[in-house]
Amino acid sequence: MSDEPSGPVSDDARVPRAVAIIMDGNGRWAEARALTVADGHRAGTKALRRVVEAAIDLGIETLVVYAFSTENWTRPTDEVEDLMELLSETIDGELPDLAKQGVRTRFLGRRDRIEPWLDEKMGALEAETEELDTLNLWIAFDYGGRAEIAHAARRLVEDGVDPAAVDEDTLSARLYAPEMGEIDLLIRTSGELRLSNFLLWEAAYAELVFTDTLWPDFDAADLGAAVQAYAARQRRFGARTRS
Ligand code: FPP
Image: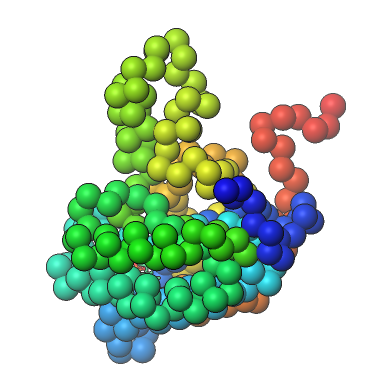
């Protein structure tokens, strides 16, 4: 099956094909309201739903969101458990509603450390939405960019690839999801100016947009503003465009 969505995807070059978001600031949002961190993450899931719907309206084809990093396992056990539970609730609650709007959901990252019951739910959602093509949603969960590149390197060795044949194409074909493609626009909320090990390979030439807005407050207008900033950029991919 082609990965090309047939939905309202835009062919306007000013609309990025693939957008990645580091959804940061749930904890600070909660703290400012004397709420728990879990409340902050729960508000983050509502923002995720809003933003997926806004991405459909803008004609974005692929959205990749950072929900749980390989480093997030070091957070307090309660918070890790809350995030696992929240993913489960999101699979039961928000994602089926998004599927009705044509959203195909897949997960990006390691699957061997996630509890079997959750892994099964993730797999079931992926299977249930595999024919949908209005928007490709990738949820990065137990994801790390370095781990992904190390995984690709391991697969090159396992596949017996001749060292002389190792290049960008043979390596990128062994990333977690080669069909996801390159990231055009990467957004990070909450004022932090870091990539935090997100999509190190795929975002090599992404345009970066940082906003002070905390993730639970991020909405369609914020996404629209980031896309407008992207549209105003001149992408050169390392080439010289002036003599
Ligand atoms: C960073 O904010 C956010 C996370 C580590 C988790 C992101 C998760 C969501 C937005 C919930 C939706 C995801 C699922 C499960 C589908 P932070 O907690 O580091 O914020 P802080 O820097 O203000 O403390």
